[in-house]
Length: 289
Image (cartoon, rainbow, N blue to C red; front, side):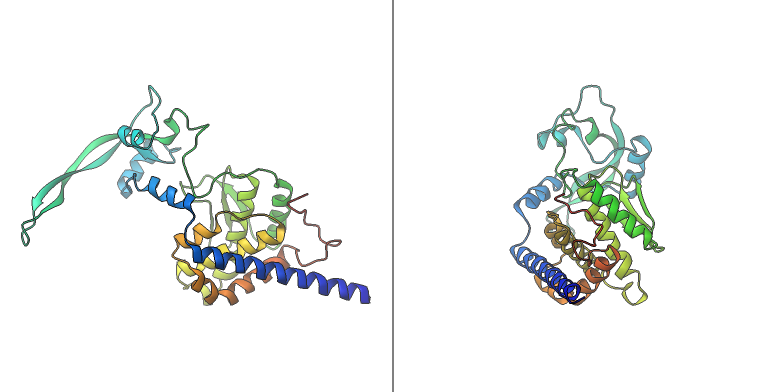
């Protein structure tokens, strides 16, 4: 009996040390700002326009599988080539003219109308299969499917429904008000785990009445931080947490301000997923297995 108590205390100490270590690393990383890889991604994104709701509907009606679109010459500017014979998507492009500002007399741009213009889906680039577009959520080794299936089962046993569906470009997951967790279809097992943990954090913490009105930036900081900590407990590196949090204007000070909430979320996740047991008792396969 005494041995069991000592083992439990050792395990609790190890969990606490791992949690504190993961949080401290994240604080240090946030203080350093975005990674160079993410800055490259921002420079790439800056070449593309944000499309209006009407143009999004036009794109979906003509090419529902499109993940990114751009004009032929825009693709050329970023070093990509559209396949010969690819069918263009027609959207509305603004007609911009320079007019004199009535107060300053200086030339200013003014939208005077719209013309139909062709754009091409990223799926029609010649080397898209071997040279995918840069993304925050880059593919990772698909080597922890057993661990994902274990975590998914534990989440479902706790009363949450987990689905995998085709989601809009840039969306990796979502949590519905009824607690249903949706993951983007086609993710590798490591990204599936990261997204599952992120959405589980939302379901456990941010569906509570007293937290529903918390600012989105704070909710995303807490969910991603908790997911990173649990990934550390599982022996999985979480390469996108830093940039994701910074993308939502999170920083080291914000992380410190949310520490109590993050620790609360992690504690509930550890218990729900069966990670608080001793190594001999836990049914969770380790990422390294």
